[in-house]
Image (cartoon, rainbow, N blue to C red; front, side):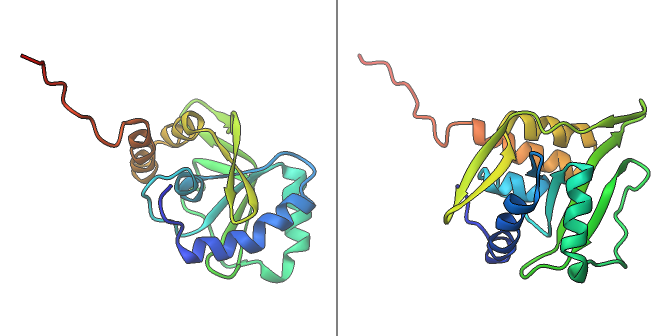
Length: 168
């Protein structure tokens, strides 16, 4: 696994236990933080958390004093959800309750697919499987997401391949 940046670790150490306590429905990380946890060499500026709409409302109430009400997400015309951004030590945490995406064919839910748990210093962090992360990122169609999908695809490749030399 690639090195986990300290800022990401600090944010996860505080947010993940609360997500486990306050979410009634399955949840997971997506985006750059999820890709990094699987070992992709990508930069991480925030933690994107995919939750149900109901859990987003519960967490928004619980984290009300942390809310960054002045933040407006980019690409609001392509994505919709019960969205909120919160200030956490290390980096912001963004909740996306019931995330939907419109790639020109109408609004469609963003299903996380098969989840895997990544262990991080005693934390169990759910993220979509490698193939599901690639699917999600490619469906978003943005350059930054395509770059993350490429970094994830590289995890499928063997680290080194030794040449086969015929014996004479």
